[in-house]
Image (tube, rainbow, N blue to C red; front, side, top):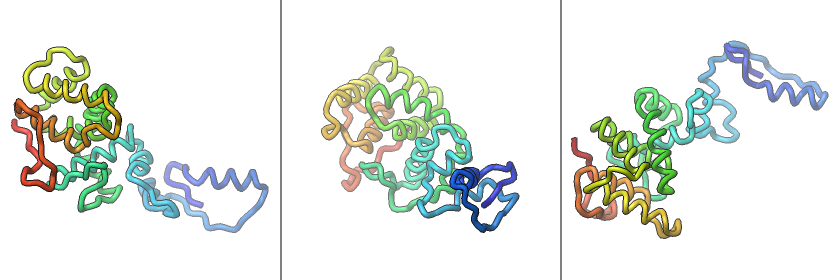
Length: 212
């Protein structure tokens, strides 16, 4: 039984003891650092979302997923189309540190969730896309995502992206554009493409890079 410096944790285990009216012999430790719980009770491995939630991070699961996508994007190893991580898997603690070093992710989650809800897209992928574009041009990224949600003031490549996402949302889940391709279309539109088209990641066309 452990108690951290705030006096919390393991209260459920003690309540179960009271409810069962059965005593047991155990070791008791006080003053355990709160962060250490991310590495304890590994009968079921703690996910990054669990660690984020224990740290009090809002939208913990989405935030962890966004960090995973952006880290792989920065390393040139984006997740596969089904959302699985790339070649290098970060630990929950590494993802949490990445989140703390990139304060703008919390803002991007809000913008990304709105677009995700409008077009039936993954909120974590959309939040990651917002953050990737936001680092290039914060004002333009915010404006773009607001226009996609409102459907107002659309023109050029942004109108093309809106129509593509809107049409995609109307078809069955299995027929929809794969998430990684949706992200590529965002960058293509950002760069002013007149046609949203991208080859598979294993082809000879690398993932597009947003221009400033």
